[in-house]
Image (cartoon, rainbow, N blue to C red; front, side, top):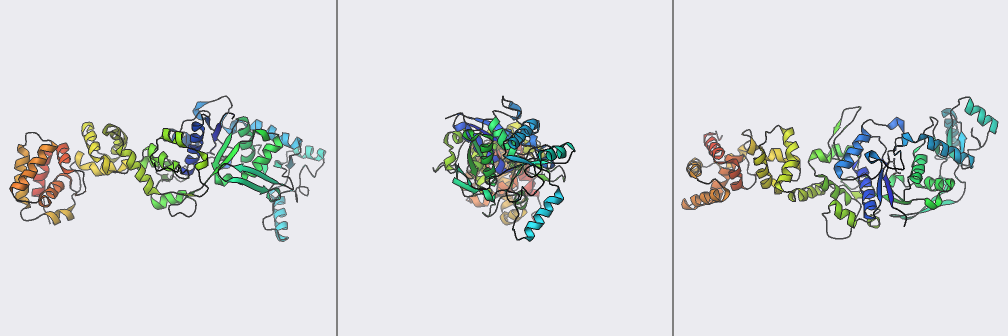
Amino acid sequence: MSKIRVRFAPSPTGPLHIGGLRTALYNYLFAKSLGGSFILRVEDTDRTRYVPGAEQYILDALKWSGIKIDEGGNAGGLLGPYKQSERLSIYRSKAENLVNKGWAYYAFDTEEELEQMRAERTAAGEHSPRYNYSIREKMSTSLNLSAEEVQQRKESGQPWVIRFKTPENGSVVFEDLIRGEIRFECDQLDDKVLLKSDGWPTYHLANVVDDQYMQISHVIRGEEWLSSTALHVLLYKAFGWEKDMPQFAHLPLILKPEGKGKLSKRDGARLGMPVFPMEWKEPDTGDLFLGFKEMGFLPEAMINFIALLGWNPGIEQEIFSMEDLVEKFSIEKVGKAGARFDFDKAKWFNQQYIQRLTADELAMAVAPFYEKSGIILDDKKLIQVCNLMKERIQLLSEMPEKSRFFFSDDFEMDTKQLKKRWKDDSEGILTDLLEILSCLENFKTDEIESAVKSFISEKGLSFGKVLPLLRLASSGTMQGPDLFPTLEILGSEKVVERITNLIKMDKN
Ligand code: GLU
């Protein structure tokens, strides 16, 4: 087999959506699993939809996700430039080449003429009038006008486009690696514009020319491009590149959590979940969308989650590192049916990955979240806290609030619980405990635990009477991590201070 070369070809019209990231990931996994190359090509030919910052966002998001680019982006490469706006002369000459071969033609129609044509045909009963064989010779095209007139119109500066001359009959058939045989009837296709009046190519022309020049072996992209593939296959034929035509694979949609309809940016806002890998600020409106990163995901967990949105390895294993994915991925196991975006599952993956971190690694990962929360950190304590809390969080962003009481006295008391747990003998119990704990020689988990438990049994008390009081005193909540290690981390002085405070506190 010739060399595997795939490309991820985003248009910088906004941030990379989670569906786009999955396309990049599947391309990457496919290439890496077969020893091939992953190429990034920026398709920036639609200047009206160009969004400043989007290109950098795509590079940053791929980097954070652990998807490494072999060619394009900052990696360079021999078959560049990898940005379409830097390849304009190639497209123009290729489009003219098709005109010369009789596969395309110049069209001079003005907006008004096009409007009129559509109106007339609609009035004649056509549902959605096409610009195709039935009309092209009646319009202002080089198929209709004399060579001199074409020349003269071009020289006079009249705007023109180049359209593809779709065959009148026959069908386009190709094999999709996910969907099997796909067939389109030519008479159902439009003569699409290849080169626009501003001299820029359309997506179709630039995409096919670049896939050929960049020696792309497989085109793996979203389902929404399936219908364009008919024209692309015809273009390969028209250029005489049929034998180099890449194989196609069209990925299933990512569906809303409810399971119906395509996941959109609005679903993210509506359901408080991220649909972008990283934060994105809309340049026009200033609207801010948090990404997986800011919501507290580890990139490995996000990748594991999205890898399984459409790809089903058919085994029980659910946790896949990037290396595992590279090893196990196969395009044949990608399904046709849409994959539901289940945010709870995403959080479950994150929890699994958090639990696998060492305390030091977790401390590094959560530090930026503490910084945002304004909590002043003590590094040694943070590592101890991470060790203790690792099992109790799903998102890195939960850490600061859930552990505030370790670092600051400014934490909330669950007064409802306090009222419920505070009994006539509570003050006496805490006073005794103060005495016991302040005399402990070694303020370590085991010692604290045995001292408290001996006290409980000597006094004939129950755990339920004593431990909640200690919990509330030290952390203000009944939901905190294990009590005795918590007390050790806080240290004897702090624990004594907090028990004293609780005794003094107004309970009503
Ligand atoms: N520029 C297209 C996009 O934004 C690329 C589609 C393709 O991969 O052919 O998704």
